[in-house]
Image (cartoon, rainbow, N blue to C red; front, side, top):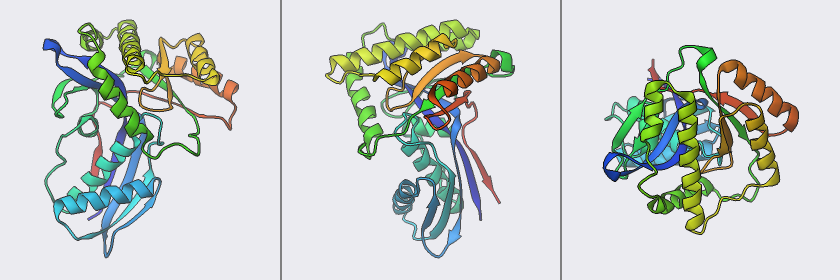
Length: 296
């Protein structure tokens, strides 16, 4: 059996409270950059392609968990860039695990963290500390003129960056979340999605992002932006982004803008400023269905 998996990335938006004061992790599944991989039986475990090292470790862990000794050949065609705050490790891990579970006809992937929910269902997510789904909404995009588009600038990570940099940032954000007061809720964000109110969504996202940055600073881990990062964010705002900031768990810079044409104009302005050999510039809309698993 050959199994193909196409999964979204997962952008963590911070922590916020739900009704009753329950603290949850807030994030959104985006269509790009994705994970694409294929797995099929083999005499031994072979993993090749983008981020093959992480894919191999994920496969070893999954097979050990399932008590399976079957060999597999896994080719990773596309992987989410590492260190950008887009869930590269987590989304590759769940993609590899789901491919192996399908191939071995094992039980479905358990829902134990936000990346699993992004994989299974996509959308805007609020997930509790035990992996329970507190709230979900789909950010619809039926008309390109009205799309809510995330414009991403993904720089080259420094050579000396720690292998677990994104994991360290996630832990720091989670540890600081206890400093968020009761006013930092996800209610306005989800209400804006329900009303299809882009401006209200951008305002709520800006407030949540600022509150989480303040919590990090209060916890002794201030978010320090370099001069080029500040210039890029200023370029995003000048180009019409209603929200602009650095990913809370990585090096990626992101702006939120309304409309496909506006997002293309902003990307063109960023490329002109950064050069064709500079950081990667791309755009994405919300993924509302989660991963696709194709067997054949």
